[in-house]
Length: 421
Image 1 (tube, one colour):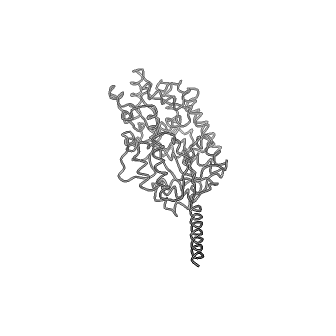
Image 2: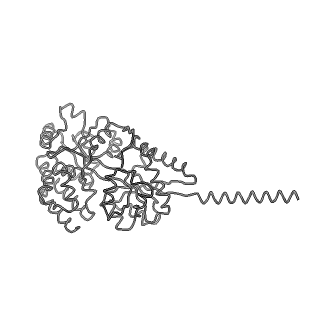
Image 3: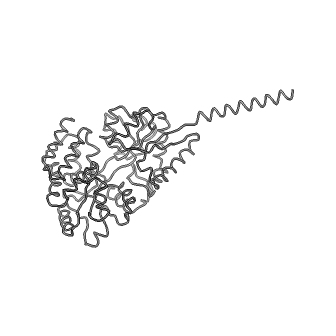
């Protein structure tokens, strides 16, 4: 009798163990995440490995696997990864309406509109940002913004102090400053137009300074012809900078890295970039304490950086873990994680909402955040229809190489805009 009792107890224990093991196995899940692009950098890897560990600790049985990006939407790497059916469950990649439209039109990413209200994401980003997302694609949202860009002028504090230079308040005085810099045998400003983004950064800044956000916004929306003098002035001014030697036309052969090297080596006094440029500077061994930031001077109002949504979370339409992917986004949007990221030395962007008690990890980021506090203008590179972008960047290349005039360039952009609308 006792043997039967012991055997029954053993069988019961074994059954319980099997049941427990099955339950544990059922809870075991893997979330494959694409990004961030700098995951191989030590500072970035340390930050994200810590975030991964905390998410796994809060979700027993879950393992997060990073899939190091081979590129982004712009070069087709994201599309290829999703279409392989062995891709990520959640992605952090470059965004902006034109890029997101590319993957939406290809039915590669899932709509997230319902999750915004059901999970409270609509309260986790700036109200103006949520309004902007809702204004696109008939109100359907496919992304959760992770980082905003703020593009303006980076300059060397020591060089400017030694020469008594300062970023002025007006564009007219900015031309005088560039003349003074050129007299010293230094390139006033560097640009690497062979990298589309670098081309668009400077051009967008000049458009903003020349025309103002309302006018640029009307042109981007197709409500104002790009040939209208109110928007064409920016392109005319870029060509004038080339003709004056303030932008060396030989820079047409440079990409972003080449132009950045000119700036890091102080062969150029200024460079248009955003908070992400801190990573480039660290990699180049540049002392970030010597970097200053200012918005492009304007004669038509308060100067402000240009920008837009630079990076977003998206969930592939074929994600194996869509619910877990949304849980990950919940975690990323939490105050604790967002503040942890913002105050880390690896931080390279503005975040999608104000963060209480935030202390920027570097002075240059504090200056960028301060310059953007009143808002940012449009960076057309992330707003224009995808079918227009190639022409847009080719026009900038043509202006820098002095092969076309400003009016000719804007006529080419307008022709593509007419086709898109």
